[in-house]
Length: 202
Ligand SMILES: N[C@@H](CCC(=O)N[C@@H](CS)C(=O)NCC(=O)O)C(=O)O
Figure 1 (tube, rainbow, N blue to C red):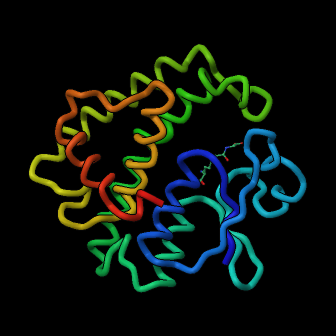
Figure 2: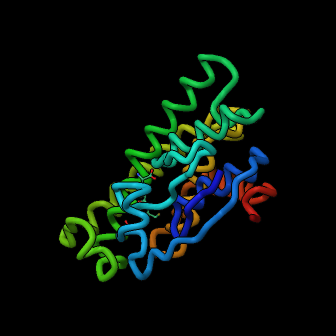
């Protein structure tokens, strides 16, 4: 398998998951800054023109990070999703909450402000909404922080895709002016726990 990867939190999620699972995946960089990902060769792999994209051993392509990580998880002996129907459902519930409430809003806040020069000719940008997307992200982080009492990871004592997803976006946020507020003490402690994992050092 080969992962077409590059800058940004979405590729980072899959790269961390690969390290967690010990999956055998070759990496090939695509230059996001020059827009190589929006041109012919990469569009043929992924019509969304985004990164990452996984090439399977049969030559077909898979995009969307949650689908990619679920696939790699199933193909390995890992358990980033869960080992029972209940665990898998719980992981998917949190992944969807984190994706819709935090990752999407954080990303839009960036693309419509600091990232505007890069994205204005790629996607429909709403610069006047950037501050609102950033504010919603912070509100949802405070909400999530309030639900972390007594939990080691997002799904209790299980380290899952939900942790990797949130970690990669908060790591990105810290570098683009959307840091996790110090008042989110439970999430700060959770962030330090995830940051200490070997997979994150990759
Ligand atoms: N929904 C997609 C999002 C992928 C995405 O937005 N990737 C970013 C990198 S973090 C990208 O390719 N940005 C460059 C562009 O859109 O031109 C997924 O789950 O993989």
